[in-house]
Image (cartoon, rainbow, N blue to C red):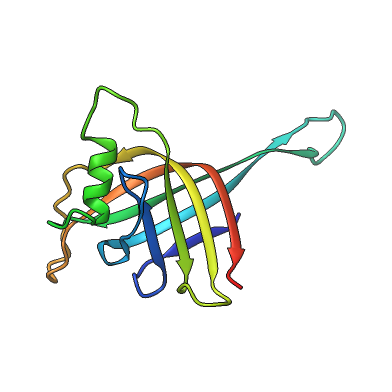
Length: 151
């Protein structure tokens, strides 16, 4: 199944919705992101047939985003902490994220995702020893998705 995967802020521009509903460019504070499409396939066993016929089920999308720790309010890590952790007495709800690949120029791809965070690594101290900040991984389930070529 198709997977959209970016591993460098030079390959994609990432905008994440903050608590005020504004889309904030968090590209510099994201180390990697991935959106995956998965289709369920069912098999029907038929006596006497060597191969089982298949049938298509529903599609699901999930993904991940790795955010670097940062002192900046508009960093991916701080927006995600505010969304998922600031008030544990309420449900976090949906948030939007937009990926532009490779940029926002004509001919680039725009992926709009409405997502739910399913887990977030609050404490992660696995820096690479090269001065790179530790990455915190967000696992997400896609609620709604669309893409377009920018014209």
